[in-house]
Length: 109
View 1 (cartoon, one colour):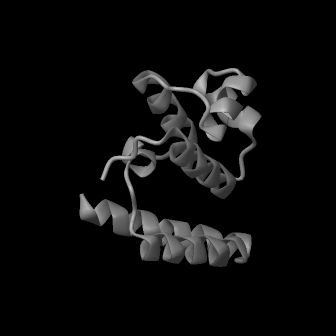
View 2 (cartoon, helix red, strand yellow):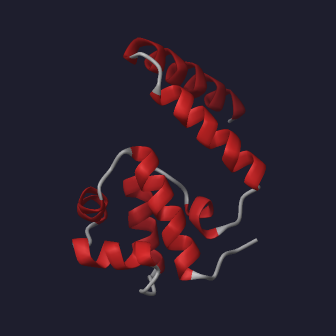
């Protein structure tokens, strides 16, 4: 289901940005936006063009579907749990886990 509420979209962007460990300024720079514009987008107080959405998604390494559609709450909870567990891993274990995930995702293509 598509999301049309800019506040909800902004909250999702905030969540993805935090997961990536990025600041608003870093996302803004990577997306070619001013810090203020990106902050307004996260607050849901500004209407975005499709081009802007695409640049932000590229900066956060996500697809537009991930911010423009509703997700299953149970799946989000599992993702959050996995991200927390991954953050707690040693650098070597993180690298191994990410390699395994990469191989698995490539197998889906």
